[in-house]
Each structure stands twice: as structure tokens, then as C-alpha cells.
Length: 452
Image (tube, rainbow, N blue to C red):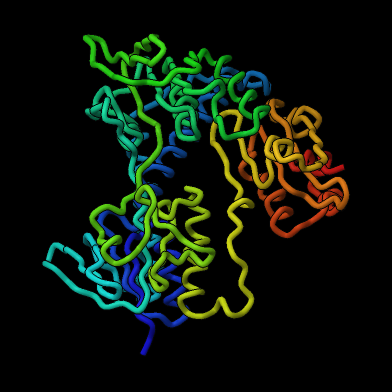
């Protein structure tokens, strides 16, 4: 009898696990309560990147005179943007659905919980259904964190999912949270012409990132007129006659027409019967081992609810590895996921991407490294694009030449980081990059120059 594999949550982790396991011969049932493709993916990632792309086009229009063209007066059509986001979401959702159906994955729309180690109860529109399983995957994702001192109303006080786009475009947006999500919203709305104030709880934006990278972004934000409240934590939001007032713990008050919360997420694991089944959680996140197994061996967790890197790419890789493990493929050529070698990107302007060992972390541990850096301005393509801001930084082992990590700031950083990510994952040397014949003129030539 085929392995009965039940997946709760149809985001990147869940649908990838379902597809791979079905191809390997499993009898797969996928339960999703919101949207196939994942709420976090299709209601957060895709809309935000769509709006950022539009904002980038508007920014390009503003500087187009530097390329020998007349100035273009671009402005945002909110209704058209909303329709474009919806159409992209629908196309991606339909693609995921078609792929799953083509693999004979059974799809159930409903809310699932564990009744026991091998039983799942699903509350569907047609009633309650119980399913037996040999293996179970929890991939239920996360939702925006809302602090006790704030009550979003979807009008003036917004969560991230209420801002794609909001009902009215903010004249002055106060963004609370200076992590990846926060700075992307700052970039997005400043591109659309909104005034923006950013509440920065520490002394730099992107506190988890390389200081030089964060400084490059701060410079651009300040150039755009973004106001930074550094070293301040928001502790109250009030509606005013004209908008909102955000009070900070240091006595400062940020006034705006709208406020946006971007202060993290909480896992969707409550009410699922995990603890009763023996699955260990920490802060709501399911604790997993290198195989993505929970404390109950046949129950797995992946995606944001696993507490690992909250990236769609990581979730998809977890899903594939879980499918292999469920079907016994891990006994052959199988590599565990090395989360420290996962590439990530921030879609601001300038774009930011990094992978592997960070320079600050190496210095903090006393590890000897070689750091090489090349500015975009040294490449012909950057001059052709009239967009010379940014740099490529590569970190390597001075003794062996093995690439340990890198950071890229500037146009197409998210695409270019793939070269360094491959080098980090495959333990390639800087000489391997140098000896690759890259296309000229391209921004990728900066990679080879930085590897010299």
C-alpha cells in the first residue's frame, strides 16, 4: 500500500512536498484553509514585490534623463495596481493547483488539526472528515504580529496584508519596524511619492545585516527624504483628526496620515493539537531536526512555522527534502539543508542580497578571512545603465581560496547573488569565479573582479 502522506498547509513547503512525494509514489492529501500557494507567499511576498517593481519603474522614470531621454511623468493608478496584483496572484495560484492536480494530489479546502499521532480531522464546508496518515507535514506558515498596544483598522492603522495597496495612498506613512519587511515598505511608498517616517528600534536599519550594507541603504533612504527615528520603540498608536500619532518610548511622537506595522510574525500552530500529540514547540514554532522531523518522528514541519529562515526558497527546499525522507530516498545521495548557506535578498533601492558568512560574524569569532570589494561604478554596464551605486563584496578563506560568503548592493543584486550562493554551496574557490568567462558588458563582471 502506498505511503499515506497528509500535508497541512499549501504554501511553498506544502505544495513542493506534495508534488515530489506524489511523483515518488505516495498517496498525498493536501489541506489548505486559505489559498493554494500560501497566504504568506501570495498575500505578502508577491504583492509586495509587484508594488516594488512598479515603484522601481517610477524611480527609473524620474532619472531617465540621465540616459538621454526626456523626463517621464509617471504616477500610480491604485485601481490598476490592485488589479495587476490580483491577476498575478490568480495566475500563480492556478499554476500551483494545476501542478498538484496533475500529480493526483487530493486537495481539501478546510481547517485541519491532529486528533492523534496518525489521524487528522479536517473541518470542511461539507462537514468533518477524518484522515489516517503514515506521515504528516505541518506547513501552516505565520501571520503578522500585532502588539497589544495597537488595534489595526485597515484604514489608517495597517498590517502588512492590508497595504497591497491600501484603500487610499498614504500622504505620510509611519512604518514601525526596520527589518527586511519594514525597509521594503519604506522603499515602496517613498517611490510612490509618500512621505515616510521609519521607527528604528536600534541604531541602524537592518540590524541583522552587514553594517556597510545597512549604511548604503540608510544613505539612500535619507536621500529620498525618509525621516529616521533611531533608537526608538513604538509603544502606542492613536488615531487623530488628520491621521495617526505613534508614540515612542523615548518621548518622541511620529505624526502621519497612516501607520504600518512591520514587526514580525507569529506561527499558525495554535489549536492544531500539536502538544497533545507530543510535538514539541517553542514560542509556537515546531522544533525540527536536520530532516525537518519534529519530536514525533513521522510528523514533519517546514516553512515559516518551523522557525527556520522565513524564505519561500528555504520552504520549498524543506518540502523537497521531506518528500525524499518520507519516501526513503534520503538513504541515497542526500544532503541536509545548510541554512547558513541560503541566499536572501531585500528588494529595496538599492537592492541588497547576501549569502554565507558575514564579515562582522567572522570578526566576532576571530576567524581569518579575505574580503574583496568592487564598486558597481567600475563596470561598463553600470555606467550604461546610469546606475552606478552599489558594490560586490566577496568573503573567502585566505588559506584555501574557498568562497565563504558575500554581499551585493545595487541593481539586480538578487539575481547576481546566485553566483556566489553556488560557490558557497559547492565549496568553489575564488579562482573558479575568476576563470569563468562571463558576458561583457554585464554587472556580473563585478563578481569576477571582486574574486581577483
